[in-house]
Amino acid sequence: MTVRTGRDVLGIPGPTTIPDEVLSAMHRPAIQIYTGELVEYTDSILRDLKGIFRTEGRAYIYASNGHGAWEAALTNVLSRGDRVLVLESGRFAHNWGEMARMLGVEIETLEGTWRHAVDPAAVEERLRADTEGRIKAILVVQIDTASGVVNDIPAIRAAIDAAGHDALFLVDTIASLACMPFEMDAWKIDVTVSAAQKGLMTPPGLGFVAANDKALAAHKTADLRTLYWDWTAREGELHYQKYCGTPPEHLLFGQRAALDILLGEGLENAWNRHRLLAGATHRAVETWAEGGAIEFNILDPQSRSASITAVLVGGGFDVAAIQAYCLDKCNVTVGGGIGDLKGKALRIAHMGYANAPMVLGMLASIDMALKALKIPHGPGAIQAAVDYLGENVPA
Ligand SMILES: *Cc1c(COP(=O)(O)O)cnc(C)c1O
Image 1 (cartoon, protein in one colour):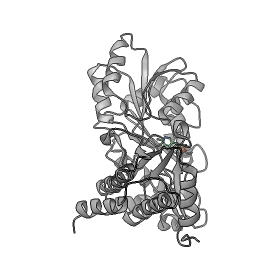
Image 2: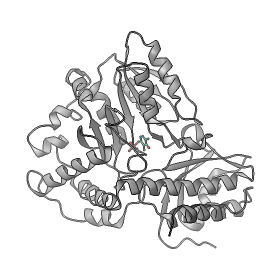
Image 3: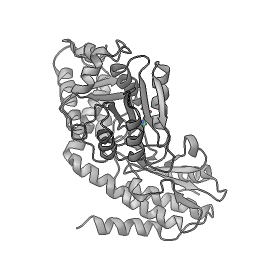
């Protein structure tokens, strides 16, 4: 017995649901890459990305996933032997730091836990102790997709300023861009990294990096530069230099259509939509938690992210069985824990092209699974989520 025939619902924190308009825009023959239409695509995407990053700096598009964009950010501003401070709050900043280590950079980790955001006071203390200015850059993620935390980027910026430290500030917005407020210039972020397949609603394969003047100055002397990622090479006259080779043109067609959807909605409206869908998800999880087997991974409600909620399943209950029920019976793919949370958590994505029926349907499918598998949970979670939206989305 199942209730699964119907649209696939993808509830993992990336890749996310791709709008039909984006898929349709990609379904066309290849075009030439030197002049005309494709150059317009590049120019308009770069212009709109800068608007979404909220920067007057430079933006670059890579034929890569987010890991490629990480490498682009590191190699353009750092040199062998530089020290970087990694602000840990889950998995992703750590992995970015490991990438830097393999490039020949010295890594220092400001340890955190998987259940809390980065503590800005600890950042300030560490930077104050760096009297010789050894730390050249600071790496942090805005939303960590593994723990579900949102780090307070403006507060971390304020901590860097309070310490009077000159390090470059590099921020990963792969799971947060277009999902919550982000202000590259106002928050004095030197390098921002993102990718197409999460809040930006496009198939995986495009990485984005933005750089301000301070980053471009550091770039001049960075010795980790390689031709593929190099910003200077990408400023060349010829269109294909912007991609160090053939542009990933179908992804650009798709990304253009996705940006049209996003800007048609309005960036602030998209931020609000995510906040509301996260709020509904949090109500459901709070209610389930009354049963004792389920709890939020992130302890402070203020630090729970707008795009993904990580939910711990305790009491020896089987997370994989919940996921299997959701997929086999309801055709909903719910994310599982990764890293420290492997086998211990669900990761519920409310990211990108997601509306109330999609998120409520996913939550209701999880609720069905909890019932069917006899996992203790507070009753009325879906009603609580609906009530929250009814109260917060006025007629
Ligand atoms: C998904 C993600 C990445 C990795 O992106 P890929 O495209 O898988 O390489 C990095 N950082 C964060 C915060 C992410 O959510």
